[in-house]
Length: 299
Length: 299
Image 1 (cartoon, chains in turn purple, brown):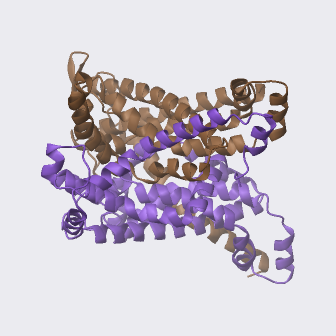
Image 2 (cartoon, helix red, strand yellow):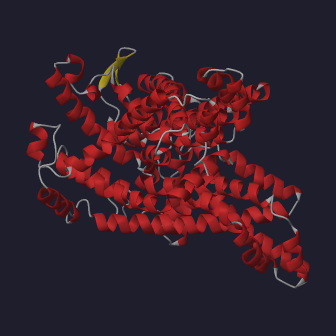
Image 3 (cartoon, one colour):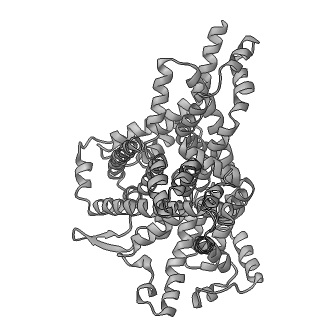
């Protein structure tokens, strides 16, 4: 959408197309970009070296591709890091949380928009107000409360998938309802009224008529919540524990770092593996991720 | 059941999942949290006795907390400046006529995809190994030792990492805003002989007021709540002196709250700190947003 962004302006500049300035700008941007990418280059290079190499000469080129496979195999099979199980847990938690947050929030937002009563206003204002509550102020009581509720219902809420997914629903829904609310307000009522007259149930109207219309805003909600949940460290640390059976990737990375202090070749390889899934996703869904981030912030 | 009742029932069922999660995850823990901060709560569900404002009084005697508070303010102010300046400059670069601007735009956002734990570890390696090695070979005394172990430079490392991580996100917001500015306004100014600098400062910046409100709010709250980079990069260290007591030089508020509860096993004090944290963050956000909103009207 921005491909032609600044083109007409430069052409307006007249007979001299600022050749020198243009080249200077390009070089400057490239150098800045290189600087920004440096940490990633450092991670890749040092995943291809031995620890002795890194300690002797921290700044250096990769030793060999063979060393890369040695490091990767070691990390892959490392029981402390246990990459595959961390990847599985991260995927399970992120995917289910996203499904639950987006479906339930869109349902609630739709009722709050279409049902213009004093109560729906109050509920909506509560969600908006709750967005300012930082995680820190609820995190300690949440643990005690989850333990109590879990004991009472005989459904473990700590160190369990259902507990952390429920917590993500609670922390993610306010912002998601707010975003859906803003979008649904702009959706014309006529379609829903027609469905109503045709005898479609209320739920049927939502799932068959309204939900498909919400597609663009689903992207926003999925991207904003997805990046946050995938990378979150503090909530999993508290709810799942540092040494529980369920460990997300950030927990695994931090745990591994604690156990293999200063073994930089392994730590760098572990961070490389930890980065890989989201970067691969970004390569394919870059347009949606950027769009979602921008729409989500501007709202 | 009449169709009217059926309709009401559906709507209530639609609201229920998010309402339950909201109550269980945010509202109840929030209320408990305020209550616990006035007790000698031990972190269990067991009864605790009221101690009035004792915890709050203790906070103002706590050199570690006061130091964390000041360090967090410093970090937030520095971060707001560096993130926004870097993001704004990059946004100008990637909306100019340079080749590959779409690739750059996507690339600068990449650090934002990766979680703070992973990034913190990568930068820990850079600050403790790569930079000292470069410093030694160039004979620069300032760089020869790790910047992480020096209490005067450690906050600079935190700001560097967070700017690197967050600038790409804020850049996207500025880019979207720049693209929303009508080309004819800029062209007219150029025809009238306005220099590039004048066009940026007199036209673009005033027209981007809304983007500045959003970006400053996001950087403010993000910096104030910073936790994961803090843990992975410095974990609060090194030791420094404040009010004649040893404190952690780079321990931000979120980490201080966590350590109070779990390292020093004082849940009630940690909770009282969290309440103060919440109040201060809310006040700052309100001041910032209303100040920026007033600027928007003027523009």
